[in-house]
Structures are given as structure tokens and as C-alpha cells.
Image 1: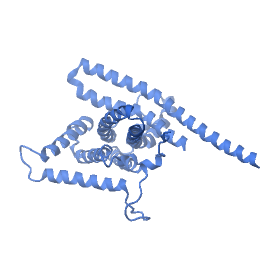
Image 2: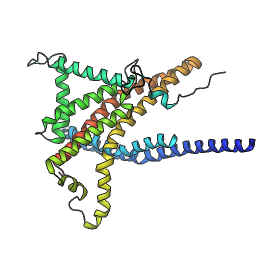
Image 3: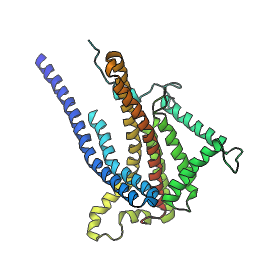
Image 4: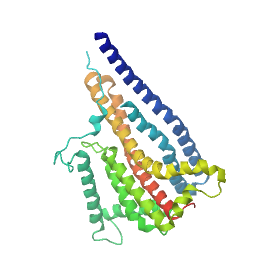
Length: 86
Length: 252
């Protein structure tokens, strides 16, 4: 009887531990792509602003839009992190 | 021996006890109280700023005019078009509301952004959702939907791929990502600030030699969160304007 209880407890701990690991990996993986993407967006926006400073305002607005769309995937990962953990 | 450093469970950071009208649907907690205070502050700011208006603005009127100008020129005219000033009141109040709610995150003694509870951004994004569907159907009829689902210049075979993606994009991803973007940013900021504050308190009482590190980091991140709060309010309003522009004149 005691062994069964210990085994059940260990299984529960194992599940919780694996869930945490999975959540961590899920968020880490979800952050890779958007990280690269935002880098490209901002880098190109800076190039554009340096080449044509008179367009800086419009470029900045578009840059924020691009960041917002790129960022969405990382944020889904962030939500998934909390969903997977609990 | 030192007491081990433990981080409180996430629920403890975001779930506040009811203050008044307990156990009724109208219960008031810290979140709703802050929302009411911010609404009142915005009202006071704008009514106070627009009373006794002068040709050369000064004081409060200056602040109000600058805010209006920022939304009108930077968001409405830039994104929707020069003929769309009728949307400026809506976008402006949306921007200010989110801005005020976000800034509670860094006000000492309060330090809790109501936008980090999902109900607030979700409600705001559903409002925007209903609004752009209504505007889209009113200005373009059913073409609004078909224009999205069957974009021009795409080979017919590709519609198998494009149409479901566009359908999910328009129906689910847009409002969800609008809400989640604001939520996740404010939530992450709140958790980060809490962690740094706890770490500062812990190092002050247990290891004062290295306490300067967490404290300096805390100050720096607080400054960064001011930027994030402003930026998220701006991006929310900007995306709302983009969706409205898309409803008014699609495929531009």
C-alpha cells in the first residue's frame, strides 16, 4: 500500500516537472523567431531612417506596426507558457 | 542560516481581494477601483483643459491640445486618412485610457497595471473588433469579407491555402493578438518588477554588500516600464487605426 502511494506521488511530481520543462522549452522556442524578426524590422528601419531622415516619422510608425505583428507570435508563446505550466 | 528566497505564486500578484460589495457581481477590487480613478482623472483633465479655452494655450489646455494633436496627426491622419478626423475622439480616449492604466504600474504605492488582468484588454479589443466589423460591412457590404477571403491576384488553386488562413486571421487572430499583446507586456513587466523588488529586499536584509545590483536594476527596469507602458498604448491605438482603415478602404 505504501509503495503504491509513493509511486503515485512520484508520478505526480514527474508530471509537474515535465510540465514545467515543457513550458520553458515552449516559450524559449517561441521567442527565437520573433527575436530574429524584430531585429530585421528595426535594423531595416534604421537603415531607411539614416538614408532618408525626412521620412523618419513615417518609417517609425511603420516600424512599430511591423514590430507589433512580429511580436504576436512570441506573445502567444508567453500565454502558452502559463497554460502549459498550470 | 539565511531564509531561502521564494517567489510568491503568480495568483498572489494579480488577484486582489474585494474591497466593497463582496460576493456580488458588482464587487470592487483594486483593479476596478484603479480603472474608475483613471476614468475620472481623464475626465477631469479634459474638462479642466477645455474650460475657458484661449487662442494661445497655456497650462492644462496645452497638455490636452498636445495629446489631441499627437493622436490626430500621428495616428488618425497618418494611418486612416485626412478625412477621418471623426475617429480621433474614439482613438484618443482609447489611447489615454490604456496609457493611464499602464502608468499605474510605476506609480509608487500602487504599482499594479489593471491592464495585466485579461478582462480589461479583452474588453477593449472586443470593442474594437465589433467596431471594425460594423464599419467594414457598412462601408463595403459583403465585399469586406470576400475581399479578405479571396484576395485579388492570387492563383485560384492557392485559395485552398489562403482562404482558411485569412479567415482565422480576421476572425480570431486579430482581436486575440490585440488583447494578448497588451496583457502579456504589462503582465511580464509587473512580474519582472515584483521579482526585482523582492530580490532587492532580500539582498538588503541578507547580503547588503551586493544589494546595489538589484536596486540599480530595479530603477532601470522601472524606467524601461514607463517606455513600455507608453509604447503599448500607442501600438494598441495604432493597430486599431489600421483595422479601421482596412474596414473603410480595403486592399489599398
